[in-house]
Length: 101
Figure 1 (cartoon, rainbow, N blue to C red):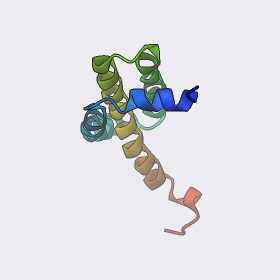
Figure 2: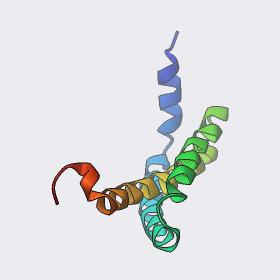
Figure 3: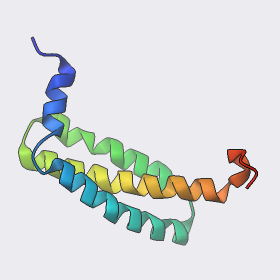
Figure 4: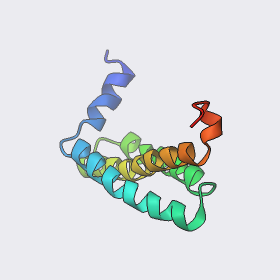
């Protein structure tokens, strides 16, 4: 009997899903930067965390290749945005980091 993690891991390694994720991250970085400059940090971070989580739903529904690639691209958009906003939050609140910058 296969472990459940082995089944989900095989779904996430659909050919093209890693490429879709990385390409979408680059796009997500750009979009999130513009979004943050227009409305701040409070709204985008929770929205992107929810979007990243919703990207798991199509993959868990079944191992259809196109669905997995699209879901990973959706997660890449949200993940890229979270990367950009994480750095923006650290820059906006340097006293919280304790580095004395």
